[in-house]
Length: 393
Image (cartoon, rainbow, N blue to C red; front, top):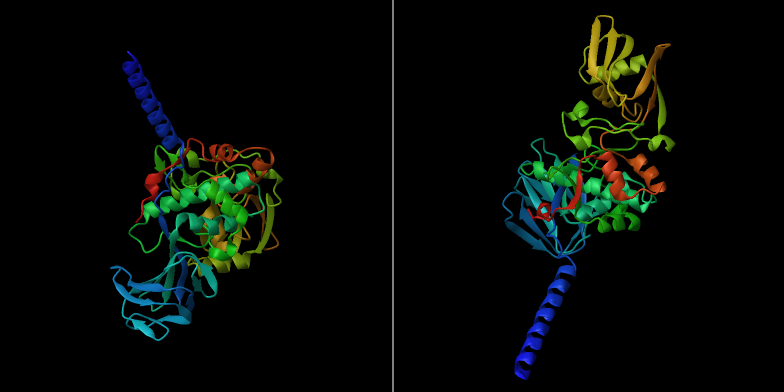
């Protein structure tokens, strides 16, 4: 009887020990995700540029990854295109492009600016150089978040910005696999300035949301955002023919407190005529300008420009970019023409789709958290950590 009791106690001990081990494994730190690399176009159509690499690096062929050279470092060197390929200092490579891969992070300088990851030099048919910076997406976000939102803003707003920026970036990685780059470094995609823009507070916001993305019906979508929505975010269908619930537009009672909520612009008609003509529109002296087709968010859909020989009808968002998005900050405005000058009085800054950044800032000040911000500006979306999007290329 005693032997049976000892055997039972021993078995129970082993079972308890196994359970403790399983719980410890389940509650332990999550294994790190495989890094996902993003390709950022940082320079386009350059006649030449300066490159410096502080550590040992490899030179590989652009499309085959064939190892061409290995060197201990690269002092400040001029790179330029040639008839046959490109030249890096005294070395000429008769290839369409080369990859420069340093052995350590933060080793590359392009025109004096430091970058993480590696660099690809691509020679264009017009004998200019383009530069693509390839790096882990979290390192990329270190440079994006402080470039898109002030690092001094609240932690919750910065975290919401990090999630939106990561989602936007990963979406473009998925849809641009056949191209030489995924995103640009300017407002055509997301502003990215490399290492020089990084800040401790924004790096923490990126780290605390590592791997977090927004999805809709199980798929990543382009999580757009804009500076100030002017009281109502825009429907993406109006601009890019993208129809999905998270980007349909919502009311925003928060950004009214922004110093950028209202704006004015006063532009001579002759200047508007010149800018339209420079873009290929055939028109004579402008007689009047009218707006047409206001939508649910309060933005105009069309601009009608009457001139002596006819009328030009142009989409409002295209008109804004031709005249200048810094002057006409949104398509939500009141327009009057007086004394040969167009007077714009508007609300908001940017295209207005997705998260209103100033709205997120005010929400954070009022005690809202990151999840509430994302839920408000991207209704119907889900916040999740999708490791499958972090597979290496």
